[in-house]
Image 1: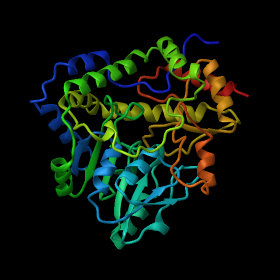
Image 2: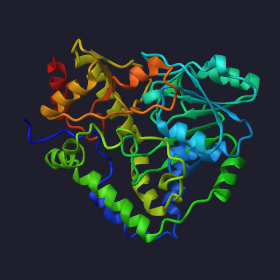
Image 3: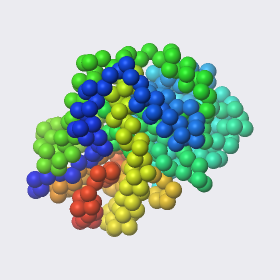
Image 4: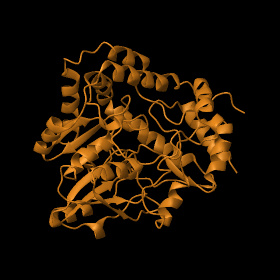
Length: 383
């Protein structure tokens, strides 16, 4: 039994970042403006709007688009289903490939549809063909780039093919902002400005700020593998759970993830990370390649490898996942569970099978080489 546990996620920001944010004045929007400028430049000078969360970006768009039908992959984050449902849209699910975890969408593109094309875990979907057909038919194309910031297809960034795109900045993504945030990218700047003016967002008051920073502090403290071991036991293991959101369901009303306008103190934390994007991208790609080359357990199905992808997950598939996971935890390696709960009907057998077999290895910017090597050793040792 190990006395330490490598965390399933580890944020980029530090105690110093959180401390500095306490003294940021909301009357000054310098960091927010600079962040949006850098993001716009990254996304080939398209319009950008930093929002409370990626799911809110989807919601704010959908309530303003006239089309009633939204096409989504059957294997996708429950947040996507929640946002579309709250926007009172008709959901159409399409089948998912077991290797890339992506959908094709082509058979579902019609003039009266909104295509929410996901680059699952950072691996690009067939976005060129989807964009071409959407343009031909007049369908609206939204790219779900929650986990694919930095991924390119034939030299063009994901997020720049669609009419709109969204990226997530939660604790498990490439960029992390407490408690959560996201960015909406769009060719239609008038729509983005309309959302900026009309969205029913509250200002980041003192109570919300303090609660968010405390939550951020919890992530910072649990970067330490010994502290994380205790945290994991108290919040997950002692309750007989695999994760805190094990039985997550779509909310029937807007939660805090939709309600608070992105604040200047959050922008200060975001800005430092935007200035080191190349380093963040390089570490993710290096780590993905290392896992791909060194994991050789025959029980493990490794994810699809694309040299032009910057992935936010290294998502393996294993049979008898719970047993495999518990053995890894006993040896000091925690793992994350993505999309355990799906919004698609039970008839999508393949998607529910994937959801029950996925484990995400620890995969983040500040993972040490020693930890990386231990993860590989532990994964390969499970029988």
